[in-house]
Length: 434
Ligand SMILES: Cc1cc2nc3c(=O)[nH]c(=O)nc-3n(C[C@H](O)[C@H](O)[C@H](O)COP(=O)(O)OP(=O)(O)OC[C@H]3O[C@@H](n4cnc5c(N)ncnc54)[C@H](O)[C@@H]3O)c2cc1C
Image 1: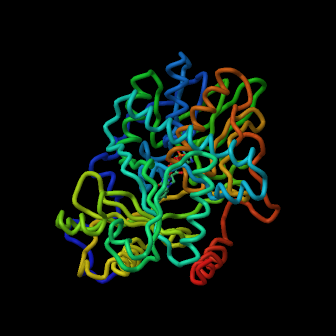
Image 2: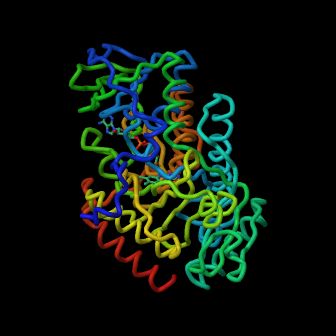
Image 3: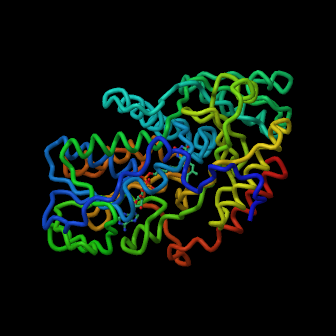
């Protein structure tokens, strides 16, 4: 339990984002339709981006969601819109060569661009802003590594950046904690809850049906179609798209064995003075450090509050205690912030894969996209649309992320018992400053 005095009177364990984007009320528990062209499992960015594209192309689409619409990572994340994978550009460049690194990162750019374009064309009011990102170096080695990575990206991808030496850090972040860092101006942020709600609204307006509180219990191939079983009945669909990412369960066993779910945690502070916020995070950029297990930080786009996330992979659902730990992290970064209280502490599941790449593909006729390793806001949107186009054209998805299946391990059945050891290993590397 956290000390009660650090919890603000309005404290809850709902994501901050649900304040402006409350989850839609449950729909009528009517039986599911007997038939559909496409059945989609999951109502996050991946499922909805696919559903919107397919419904606009005239397909009869049904989306099944186990909980309330948008229950998953899509309304719980930090809202950083980026274009970086767990595999850095330089590591791909040095290991697999220039062409491969360029192919992967040019798709990251397309995914990044697609979010901005979708927000504009669909007129989704979700605080999409390209204010840039500050990456803080935890050690001098980080500073050098960051400079090498960004210089290589600049040479080959044209991405702009500015290194900020330690002596000038306060221009980017109101703390003495870091060894400088880098500003990347062309990176955006978003209100993830409003983005998901906007996609949901456009998807329903395009004619798709969304069945919330309808967990898919099984997907059976039956000749050239699928039988999708739920507690509200069965739907026969010509195509199925599995878009469950970190919430993937045994109902889709093949995917369950290949995706590694892990918890991410965030807090929102009570309201702070504008002058304090301007000093702590000048220019309202989003911020993260350069550790293997990142701490990430931003201003709420819709209130004078700070949001901080981290401790990813911790196996805990005690959100008061986790909130207390994140609050301490905030105070470690900004010691002069004083006795700040927290108004929200929440978590959500993201997912990784054993090769640390996102994956999209077709398994026994069923389409899937998952395993975004923290880049799911742009990649979920992008790969959801790619899956929809693959269904429409009856082709394999047209992207480098479809080239390989997500690997499996004989000893892994879907419960990531090894995460505490893996995270402890990353924390050790971070303490050594590697
Ligand atoms: C704390 C945190 C911070 C993050 N920060 C960022 C960030 O800043 N930028 C970024 O790019 N990414 C970030 N991510 C990752 C990002 O949120 C996800 O990658 C992304 O939301 C995945 O979208 P999705 O649609 O694939 O899955 P989700 O949004 O997780 O949706 C999957 C849905 O499937 C449903 N489901 C599961 N099983 C079934 C079933 N059997 N039947 C019916 N429905 C089912 C679930 O209930 C869930 O709603 C973060 C994640 C977390 C948790």
